[in-house]
Length: 175
Image (cartoon, rainbow, N blue to C red; front, side, top):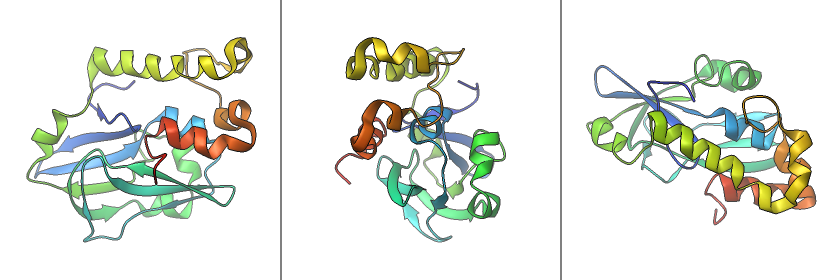
C-alpha cells in the first residue's frame, strides 16, 4: 500500500494536490481482482462526483464493473493514456495509471472518510482475508508474494459468478 494516498473501501485511491485538486485511481487489489481491463469508462470533464458513489467503470470481457469515487467534486481532467491503453493500470496503477483529477473544496474533509498508513495496510490485508471463506484452502496456490491476489482472482474463485464477486469486493454489488 503506497504511502501518501488515501484509500476508499471500494478500492479507489485519492492523492491530494495543491489547488484543491484530488488525483484519483484504483488500487492494485481492484485491478488484480477483475483481471485484464479491456477499457475504462471515465466521466467527462465537468461531471460532478459524490464520495462513495459511482465514479467510473472498468470493462472486462464485455462486463461493466462500476467503482466508487473516493472524493466529491468536479472532474477537471481525465487520463487519456488510460483511455487509450488500459494496460497502464497494470503497469503503474498508482502513478501513470491515475484516472481522474477532481477539483473539490472538500478534498481535506473527504480524506477523513478514507484510510491511510497502517490502517490502510490492515484494511488491505482484511480485504484479502475476505476471499478465504469463499473457497477455503483453494486460495493458497493463487497468492503471490506480498499477499495480493494474482490477476483475475475473481474469475478463479467466482467461476461464472465472478462479476458478482468483483462487485461485492468493490462495494458496488447493488449497481
